[in-house]
Image (cartoon, rainbow, N blue to C red; front, side, top):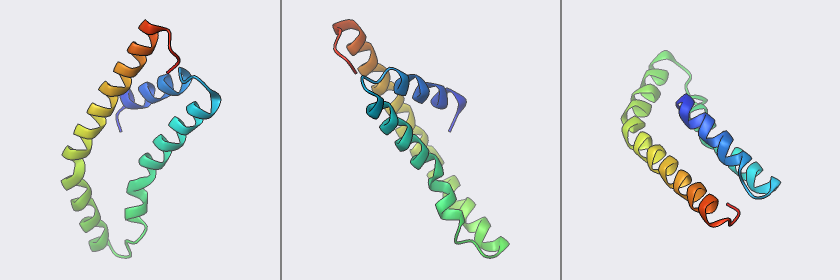
Amino acid sequence: ITSTTTYAVYLFALLASTWWAGGLVGLTFGFVRALPLLGVRRSQTPSDLHDTFRTLRRWAQPVARVAAIALVLSGAVLLAAALTGVPA
């Protein structure tokens, strides 16, 4: 997760209409950020760890695309909310 994504999530949580919506944004971000650790926890040997890293590398591009799309959609929602005066 890039620094830009982290700051965008903080901004999105800050601009959420209620405290629980901001908390949900943070909870979701934290869960997604912790997912790689769940995959590593089963590794018992260096070979297992290398296999896990190989899998993570294979998923890197698709996940990067999903993250970029999510950032663009989040920005569009925030912009639409700001322009219309409707809480995000």
